[in-house]
Image (cartoon, rainbow, N blue to C red; front, side):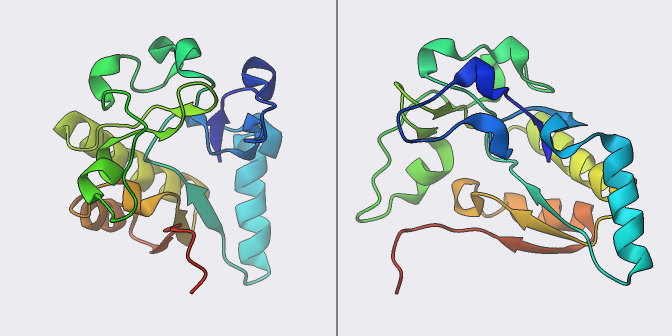
Amino acid sequence: MVKNIPASVTNVTNGTGEAYHGYWPQDLYSVNPHFGNSSDLTALADALHARKMLLMLDVSPNHMGSGPLSTVNYKDYIPWNDPYYFHTPNFNITFTPPNQTQIETYWIGGANNVALPDVNTELPEVYTTLYLWIRQLVETYAADGLRLDTAKHIRKSFWPGFIQAAGVYAIGEVLDGDIE
């Protein structure tokens, strides 16, 4: 939903995809141009509501977008344009048995393909910015619900404040690869 790192910049072709999908955000305050502009999203919300339908936005507050670790340029990220606002790059998450601390603080992806800089949601200036951002996003576009990407990758204590700030229905995505 937010402005995403351009696919032409990333050009990842190793099977992990390209960045047009919206899960590699660069700027939390701009609409991803692949999906139109702010006016288009407002018009969509109005048209849905006129038909008594609801608008659910898909948001990814866990990380910003990137390509290989060697190409990470924190200055490109809005609002957090400094390494201070991110966890230290580490990709070696232990999933079996699960290590929740690693899941919450390590980066998703890999150093040589898609390194997703993990936002440090333990910092008050980060979580208060995210709470204000989601409130403004929901209000601006009259969103009725949220789908929260990579929910298990952010500490559990973050979510109640985020959901309260949003003020709408929310559902979190938790991928573990187990179809059972």
